[in-house]
Length: 580
Image 1 (cartoon, one colour):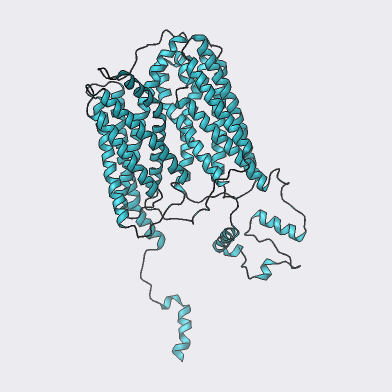
Image 2 (image 1 turned 120 degrees about the vertical axis):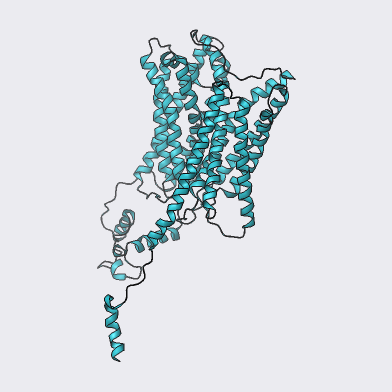
């Protein structure tokens, strides 16, 4: 009996027990396990950067006609990189098929279906471009190296397997062979970026040759007119077919450029997800709702139709004569000013709607969402660079043709519109999805209460949930909206802000119209620079102020990012539309 009575006393005295064996806590063990992952991530990223830098040097050497570096050397390097990626993808797909019965964690936010559909569409056009290149190689087979025939075939196989890989494994969170997989994925990322840079360089050279010829019609006689092309030193037969293939390739380059950059971003999200623990459940499934967006769709389609007309007139008139070229430039600037004003106003209205709504923001960890926001801001910097260059050129020029005064408001609006649109998109993607089910909201409240027990009352605690009159009493752990609902139930005075000018379904309808309008406008503004309508090349003012070669280098570096921004913004707006 005495031993039994003494047990509780000894239990209350921690000193009576021998010290427990030391074991690393969960935080310490997690930190130890994360160290090899960080080291592998750093090693793989440095490997990828070295591959990318070496490839860029090959591209630069070919572009400036460096001694001993020909196109066959560049294409051979790209072919080897693609073959290495093909081997890794085949190994990964084979291992995944062998372990298909295992349950693997997935990132529900990565590899959206619409994104994979866009990659597939651009991949089909990329394969068509490869067929054109094969025909071009056959026509000039007498004076072309075998590398120019092997490259498009390898690229087509690479594209087919990569699209299959992205459809099946873009959502994977890799938990085995993590170090090896990091090197394989980062190799794939930078291989696609080098293929993108190669396509950009080829397309830019074609645009530059056309640009040099157009400047003659604007009176800029002091610019060197030596064409910088890499035409084969032999004739092609049949001539008409070869000419058609050469012209067709440059119209398809914008699509393959988009394919390479989209594929690299999806692969980068896969790389960031390696070894990551999944936090949070599956997000609510978003659907494409077409009802109630007539106004936004009609305005957007009108902008798209106007864009096609402006691009057609621009390409027909630019370079024909000085008067026609100046008229084409003035027409483009006036059209772009009107469209950017409408887009900026729509973006400001959307931001205003969000700001008067105190709905909570989704702050959960999401690599795909963070990458989208970084790409929006990073790619917008290309257009901002061009716009600030035009503004500085207008301010410093000694003589200003009449059409340059339209360039000033166009450049200012291009900066402001992207700034506003980025804010609208980032604000939209961080909003909680509309219309969450009641059980999901209840689960979130319970989770918050469990995390802060002193500030929350339990559901069965009647005394804590009711006041002296038996009415519901607002709880400290709840939000302002729930407290306001409790005040209305008691019939007490309301301390909330005045009623919103848009609520419920009306707010959703306006936001969908804004998003649909901006989506179509971004598609519209992607078309002109992608298909040769580039006033930054053709107005000639910046070349006089900065010099021909420096300004052309700036345009060639910044324009691909500006073109990509419009397509990426359209993709982000499509995701926002499905979420609203």
